[in-house]
Length: 190
Length: 190
Image (cartoon, rainbow over all chains, first blue to last red; front, side, top):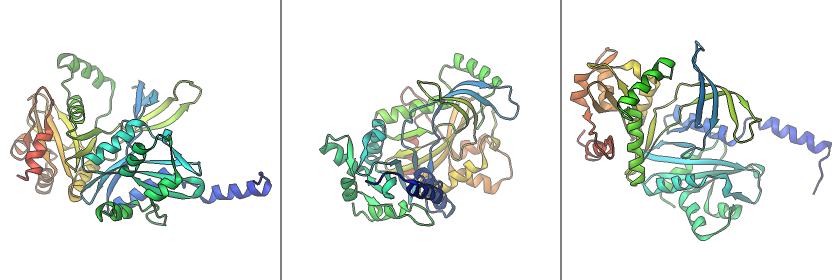
């Protein structure tokens, strides 16, 4: 292993500069905007739930919230419609190079994904291994297979590589997961 | 969407006391819970979007938001899945006895409903005339017909009575709009 030296640090900062704003949430949001603007799909990120405790009504322009706390979301972050189908997914990044820890997802979010599948919707996880620069779509049925057959608290990268699909990164849309949905679900190769 | 102000909240608390739990949002939320618990449909209200400005990270138990403001929602309040179909709607109450003012809905929310319809989803408005104790489901196509053929800034109750559907209020689910969706969309009488 190489220990950090000045050259490496400079290199790191160049990467960060080059990939500014390249985090997963941002990539999905701009992809969704592309799908929306081009009338391909209507998919939005849900707002983060906030419990408002104190509000200042004296503010003339806009009600000012003076005290509030983040709440645990009831469902996944993203949902919407594509070709008449209900789409639902959660997106997570990991810095781990070999596995994806299930601690990254709330148990009720997994339950929600399973429920959507059962009701005839399309649900999945988008998992990015940031250091490897790889982003996968893992269908809920494959997540379920893993949970049923394993007691492990993290999904090995090898399982995701075998059962998931690499999401192509390009200029527009940044993360073309709709193309994959077409191939996996609409074309029914799963 | 109306944002909370002091007057509304005082008024709200009186209504809540008299007709405990009888406001539209509450009725829809408990109906959705019934559908969820009985595995009939998976429909949630989206959290109200809040723009967080200042946060106190010193709070040990939970991050405290010290300054935030309500934002205009990008879409409608409710969406989810029923029998594999994507469901999307906005719900509004009016105290007016003769018409429903279109000022109650943001233009981009109407655009959103039309988009959902175009992409093969089921979208509609739920409108309650509180004083009349009547709650209607108005399909987006009927809303669109009205907008195309009229310059009026409010929809007369008579138009809603002719083109919408009364939502039955009962013990469980409180507002059985899924039963109507079955009749209107799945049975395709529209």
